Image (cartoon, rainbow, N blue to C red; front, top):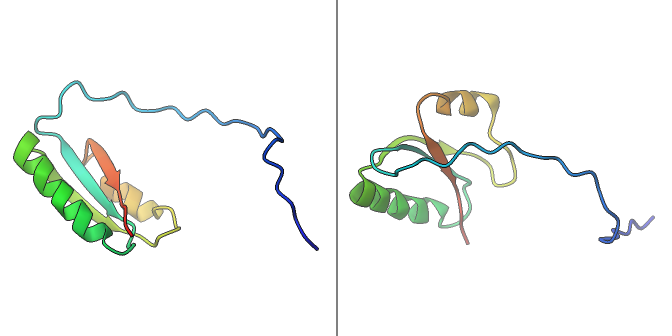
Length: 92
């Protein structure tokens, strides 16, 4: 059996409440989420160094996860209260 995806069919939309953007970047605490794709760790490390140098940010947590998997509950718990925002991995 063959399934066909019709992109013209509308689907239910889920609104996601976003956290307000910070007023300043100086001194924020950041989490790095490495998705284990090729070169993600190198790109994220360079970005973290730049944020620390430019905005005196502090990398508080580095989390590694599988490429297509969401963060585990324990990983989310590790971030809560320790960071102001997170940067998710890139790669390839």
